[in-house]
Image 1 (cartoon, rainbow, N blue to C red):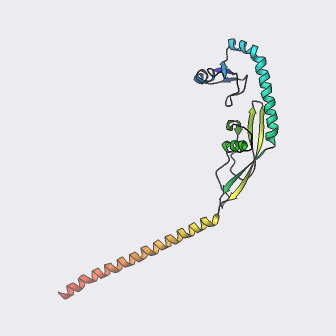
Image 2 (cartoon, helix red, strand yellow; image 1 turned 30 degrees about the horizontal axis):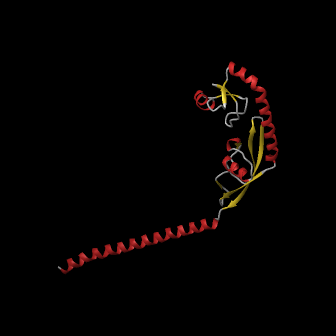
Image 3 (tube, rainbow, N blue to C red; image 1 turned 120 degrees about the vertical axis):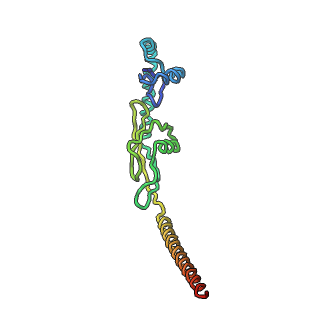
Length: 197
């Protein structure tokens, strides 16, 4: 079903866009809330009268988005990723992380507007795209710093694990020798009792 958006709706589009959606979503959500109207000849005629207002609203929104884009182009968002001894990172930077960092810097951006092009899993400079308007997409710089995870603790853990294993082997070997010794004593005892008879 095609609808014409009367308001911006991030996952679908912006004011004046004609978009295709599921019938139930349109009838139960978009149309009752006044976000969209059904795309029909009647509604198109009605909207043509309102189109001047919609177009001016859209132009205003685009201008605001372009101003905000100029500001966001200058922003560098920094993250610290934990990196293991072999250089493998633990986790990655997601759109949710970028949204939280931008909010902390005072920029209101929804995570649905943020598009992480390639998964950010390593240190260095990366870019994500922020879609502020249907015609305005701005790249935001993401700087990732690697934080080394303490390798000596892991090495000590391995050594203590090896010590435990060698201790267990020694204990099991001693237990085996004792059992063998007890077995020989028991075999010797019946022989002695037979000799006594």
